[in-house]
Length: 488
Image (cartoon, rainbow, N blue to C red; front, side, top):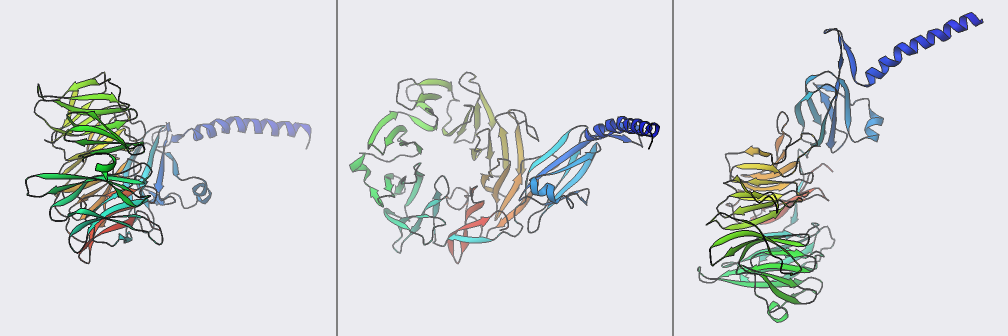
């Protein structure tokens, strides 16, 4: 080939490169030519991440990830590029799992993310975690141990403690000086090392007078420690454990017990509820002289630096307080009113809802759910920037049922909830784009007891093992069930 033809070939290659390179760059940036509109448009994309991973993803009924083996192997998500602006139906399916679908909107130059798609088992295997006929149960923090109550042939209350997933199981039994007919365990708490259990027993001897007995069980020594002898202590109504300190309420007085050095002291008086966060105690205090109720804050090292945050509505009794990660204060009254205080400086009391059975903060403490007999709501304490975005103080109705809601529990991502309605445990997502996927997960084998009876309407989720625990009926007994969320 002579010099002339070589020059022509070189110039041609340069021209082709100059023409194609911008087109390739524009295409990579999501630009396309719309032959119908006869104009250049910018496309969008969708990312979907499922748990379990490697689900089949369909866009308008067409499988998207059938030839993306290496992409699926390297990534835990599926990305669909070059989508024109508009609405699409997206569906996720995996063998033996509930399917998921949602109509999504693709916007120009934007990526629509759906990274919390949970596909629970469609036919979950439910097994008996414990076959004893139990009355109530309490897990330690990491869900490795459980304490539960049963009754012997004389109807005495027996507290049993065991480590789950231990073979053979070593069960510790403690016979308590109480009988089923007029007694119940209240406010059981584990310490941080799961070596001690603290609780009280409420004994109603004449259906009018309650007598309280305090118990402290040392699991390492496998013995009940006599509180009167070791601590000169009488029982309380609420317990909270912080490091080596156990805070408890007794006759509306807050005490602090340190079981490591066997000390106890009266900390605060006239307290109806409290919460410990970092080095501070937030509490609700009544002043008998002027009948005022207010929220206060104090360091838990005992220094006299009580700080008034705000006064509360006259005549209301408050029984629960929660503290967010940003020090916002959530208060619930016995009348069912739920309030929010912004912080120490902005002390305005905001009424969130006037019909609330209970509330629970998420593990990040940036939002909380609350519910009543027929509704579940989620309240956002911070702006949520991930999709779908939420404004700070957004208050969303998640679901409503005509049957009574018995219990609610967070899933580990704080983007889903378990809840019990009638004889069914359901699972629902918070993502309200198009619709909220909600489906039946477990059918109980017996009608739950009425609301307020402990041990029945209780859901415990273990994020490490991906297991849900609940009480159910089997062979005439209340047995603890466990169910794996995903197919094994």
